[in-house]
Image (cartoon, rainbow, N blue to C red; front, side, top):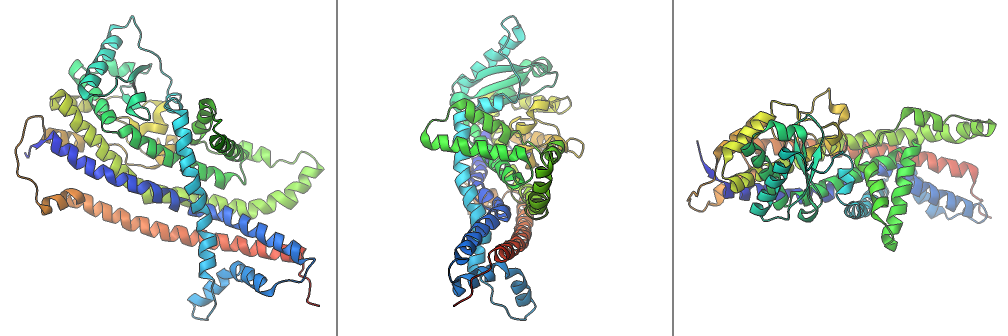
Length: 492
């Protein structure tokens, strides 16, 4: 068996994890493309209606209206061009209208989401999982607190706050935004299941994770996930009153950010809903569209039903397309980067405890017991061990759970830990071939990365095509409506 020093394993995983930061921005930008299905028709419709109202009282500008017409009828023009029948397609205007608005909204929204997350602090996540202070009368809980303090001192990080989760499940987690506000939560089942060395090894894993900056990386992951949740709310705002309320509260919070009047309670209120991955309640949607009087019937027939049949259906299609893109396009890359962080934390735990066997024993034991904390599903990837995602529990996964594959497989993890050595290992500096192999990973990992890259490209193409078709279809409807309401004034 090839033995590796824990420093080598740390350096290897740090290099792999740096790739994560490059994914966040394109993940936010490209995921915003489906938003154009809602944003672009609104922009186009407002411009065309305003222009139509102006042209109703003044002579029209033929060139201006020809530009609007070419955009609105782009779909048949493109179809004719594909079949070789000619067609002048305004590609530049279409690219600007069908891609830029959604990307711009997401690009602006993401920094605000990150700022709200920082203002809300770790409390936004801690509130998801009920916990308490360690009981003074409990010797086991006080010993656990002492072990956390010892490992924090050994790891050179501020001593995290300590909370206890009353649950028979055996698990532990570090939550926070930075090492300065970290909190370690452990279940009563965890404290009672593992032995002293095993508990210390798992604590060292979390302390190492805090020291290596995983909380900051997790905060970026959560900000991306929360921005995706905001995207979903924007797409559902047409048909779901709860989504409209969330968007309204988010915009109000953003205004307070600009004015520097936002407090932590307001930020937590918004982040709780974004992180919680709220889904529309069918009864609430049905009640919102239930007419209460004659005016409501008229409003439903003349406004709501056409709205649902056009923008509503398009927004539903866009939301599912975006979710599919997130799961298959960026999910595997985020997951691979996060698994690298978990392996790095394992290597750091070996460094702190000099006892790889204890870490392996703890993981082996936790793999055979109940580790699921129901309230922990929104941030399940923060836990060092978790249950596999299956068809039975997939319905409970939301938020960060959309990115499947965030957990380490126990067997592969134990195999890696078995190769770690706490002793000094001398070796010649690696050559360029060795560095290239480390950058690409194993042949299997490289092949998997290439496969997912191809899948992501295909998904991007399908996403662009679907968004393009639906958006241009809506533009055509919006072109015909104001022209019927405001017939252009003929030239004198």
